[in-house]
Length: 118
Image 1 (cartoon, rainbow, N blue to C red):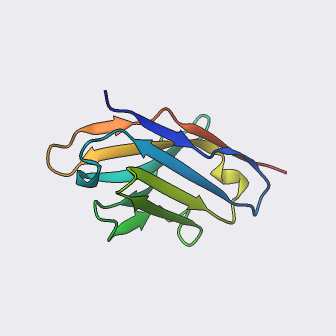
Image 2: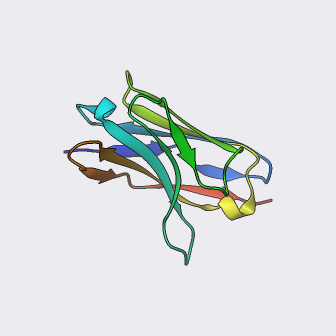
């Protein structure tokens, strides 16, 4: 059974930083594009960042460009989201997503809460 397990969420003051991790039990992790999504209360889930299989390319939502960085370690089946200069509007549950580049299998983690508040 495929599992994506996020960690690293918590409460942080505005301007602070957090680093999220997502460990994936995928045999062929390097064949999956990995993404982070988030969902704030009362809002739809939105795409935050995506990184391609080798880590050679990444993309970001306009709202997080220049503040967030997505990265991956294929040897450890892990994807990261470094979040700097956090704002209250970044408060949400953050979800890890894996999507196979050929077969389009799609997997989700259980989410980790990020709260930005003074």
